[in-house]
Image (tube, rainbow, N blue to C red; front, top):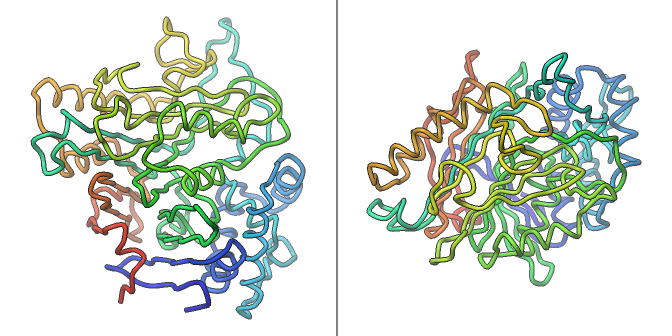
Length: 426
């Protein structure tokens, strides 16, 4: 326990509860899980993502200091996390860097997906050499269904969304052992409470839900050709900011309008390239779930029915763009680059299963979402989340620590109500 924070075990999973102002929440965050933050930074960011402390210091740390337009509130919370870590009395020394853990390293944790924005994005190879394949990497997949698709199941027409957090695979399974649920209750006027499934040190989120049922979860995307740009905002902060300030009234147009506050000078919102599924409880509106696709050069929003599965009551996403930068005459290509095989087969496998169910008018429920997430997992899924927006309940499955593949959706599922995560636990 700490002022403005508590670390609790709930149904076998760790939950970090944070309350108060940005500085108060940040201090409690760092005080309670500081050692785990350094672990995640050392063994995931340095060892796994950059694979070189020297390269991290030479390339990513300067990039984080010079190419981002950080919100002052974000920096205040980041700095408070580091202050809380120091106040806990822990050893902040990072031997690989020859210095103590500091602000830039916490920025690196929160912007690990922006590593892709630190280098120019090349154009596709010429037809003489063949198309350049999209880089391999995270392999997340998401689905959402509502209305006629879920009528007749236990959802009774309500919205269900599910995601595999897939591809953050490190040698030591730190992304499994350090999995952490956040339950955040901001004291700033007008802010919504939110829940996040991430790792220690995350001030933002790429897997989040708020108290009104707004769901925002990110899959890695690609990038169109272009240079490194300034004025970036971490995707994790964009999502967290919207979760705190928007609610169940959200539509494709309103979320698109909120993006305007985060556009870089190059015209886009998402430095590393991101595909985000947004969803809200279904109340009869035409698009309770939709997908934003974009990079640092532009952003598009895809609504249900624009691409297969062509249903007004469902939508899905993998790791390649379906409308942004896409030539309709060249399926599977964006900006002239061929999508990675994993993303293509996951989308195809999920799409075919969904379309078969829709043809049979099968009422889709939680068990069907679990089956879908199992279908598109391929040994790199560290955790999976299912959210029933109208009921405000979620299921979480986390991989085990066995030295085998990462098969989270085949593990035991734990169910929480949204409110339960703000309670006393055990």
